[in-house]
Image (cartoon, rainbow, N blue to C red; front, side, top):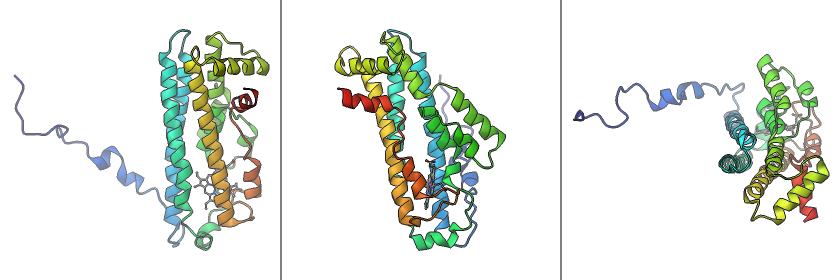
Length: 268
Ligand code: HEM
């Protein structure tokens, strides 16, 4: 016989609370303002929320990559999981693009009240942002050298991302296991065309390619949205991280993680 108790579900032991489980006191003590400016709290909060989402994106994208690598010929389960996780990646990235609107409610004058206190700190030094680029396939080791003040742990994380397979490497392994040629760019492009034209046979491969493209498209959308916001905030001034500012950011707008998936569009 089950024991009768008047304790509701979840109350047994009564050890855990909302605040202790989510570490709310710790979380709310991480916004350390450096000025009396009203808008500095918004600036810090928005950046911290980004870093939390970057952590989540790395968790999801790495798992999607692993699911693609783990699959074996004829087994669709892992490809379904990769697809499922990449859909989540894109949904989070849509939030990241929209979130710029919140920061943009700050005026340039109000930003100037505390901007000089930020230098030389800059979003350029977001380790997780660069990890995401490396994990996606845009592996440029020069960025590691351009970082200032990396901890040993951060340096190791970046080195590991440079060394490990990217999302693109994993997708190539999926094509390979489907029996499609992947030897060089020409062969890969041919295989991508085959997948695109024979969706009945390659449904999972096609859907994965589209999800990767969506991730790429949303990363490009974030870069475009960020630079316009930067121009609205600081015009042509140089960045706190020491770059030319909007000029540097505009030079990155053409970056694509999966150039062959874009090239495919011209070849269909
Ligand atoms: C007032 C708002 C902002 C301004 C004026 C601004 C300005 C800039 C500038 C000028 C750069 C170029 C590097 C430098 O010299 O500093 C940069 C880079 C960057 N910012 Fe922002 N930013 C703002 C908000 C944000 C937010 C909310 C994020 C979210 C995490 C962010 C993430 C980044 C990243 C990741 C880079 C490096 C981009 C790359 O290397 O392609 N920024 N930002």
